[in-house]
Structure formats: structure tokens, C-alpha cells
Image 1 (spheres, rainbow, N blue to C red):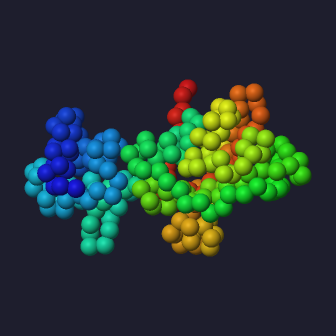
Image 2 (cartoon, rainbow, N blue to C red):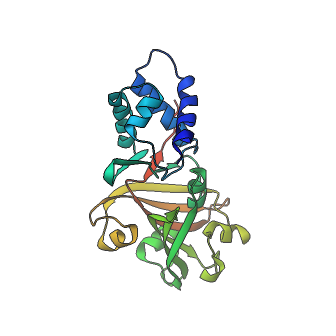
Image 3 (cartoon, rainbow, N blue to C red):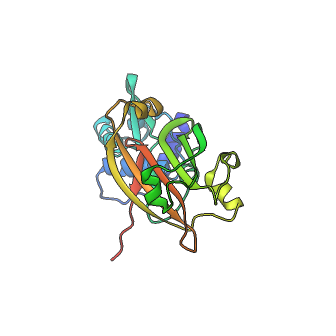
Length: 249
């Protein structure tokens, strides 16, 4: 990122900051707003502390404190050589049913996937219970690594009864696109979330260490008439994905 662009974006936010709040909080808020609005894109490099301090007439201690807070929240990453980059954390709302691709595009990133397998097979015991099907039924099971700007952030395993999706060849880049084309787009879902350590296989696919913390979701997706159309297990890298809850009284 050009230094002038960063200074212009953050300077606009600082100009509208509420007077009286600590300067490091004003700077932190200004940079955060630019990041969350996608004006500062994931992976963009920030100017050095001295450059930021001189541009806004701040002390380096103030700048360092603001950047440290942003790094704690996962919005910035410190790279070797003290290079600071905009992080690639993805926010996922748990109050709406959206696809992975929609979540990634909303963050200003490009979604993608690496297919590991697509096949018709008998359901596992977990899939039988989740989908409400017999052991002699068939499902289309799809396993893939989900990416954002080509970086792996999740491993996803989906199972769909063949009455809704008769062939894995019908799925291109989007499972929901294939289901929508057949008139079986999910309308609601029930989701459970828990933590688990990365297995050796997870670590290989997600470029993380074995035992690294993952956020795992198990989701059952329903049609409007109550039929269960999909069971999906997704393992997210804990350092790049945030789940957001909206609570109301």
C-alpha cells in the first residue's frame, strides 16, 4: 500500500474523531474503521511507526500502543522484519444463514476452494443421525479446503442425500448454487460450535501446527418444509475466523 493512501484514509477518520479520548484510541479506531470498511485490504502493508507518528504528529509510543491493540484483536499481523500487515480475519454472523463464499466476499476477499474428494457413499453414523436417513441410503459427500485470497482457512465436509443432489458432478465452485438450481436451497440451519485441536491432516491442509486450536461447527440445514438437506462439518483456523453474535433483550 502506498504510504500516501494510508495517511489519507486514516487522516479522514482521525479528523472526525471525538475530542477528549486518548490519542492512541483515536488512532486505533481510525485504522480499525478503514480496515472494516475494506478501504485497507487484507495483506496490505502499513507504513512504519515513525512514518505514522510523523504524519499525524503523534509519539511513537502512541502509535505502538494503537497497533498493539489492533494486533491483539487480529486486525493486524506483525511479520518478520517488523513489517505490519492488515490481517485476514473473517467475521461470521451466527444470526443469518450465509454461505462461505458470501462471508468471504463481504470481507472484500476472493473465495476459493481446493477439492479433496467428491463421491457418492453410504452415510457415516453421524451423518445418519444428522440427516435422519437409513444406513443403506446414499449421500454425496464432499471434502474441500476453503480459501480466502488463496490462503487456506477451513476444512469443510458436507453430506447431502442423493434425492436432493444425485451426482457430485453437479457441484462446481458452489454447493449452494447447485442446490438452488435444483430448487433445494436451505432456508434455515441449526449449528453447534466447539473447539478442537488440529489433527496431523488438518495441519497439513491449513498450514498450521498439529494441535493448533480450531473452531469446529456442525450444521444441519433445512428446507422450508422441514426436510434436512445438508449436514456440514467445518474446521476453521482459530486465528483467522471470528464468530459474531447479536444479542437483544
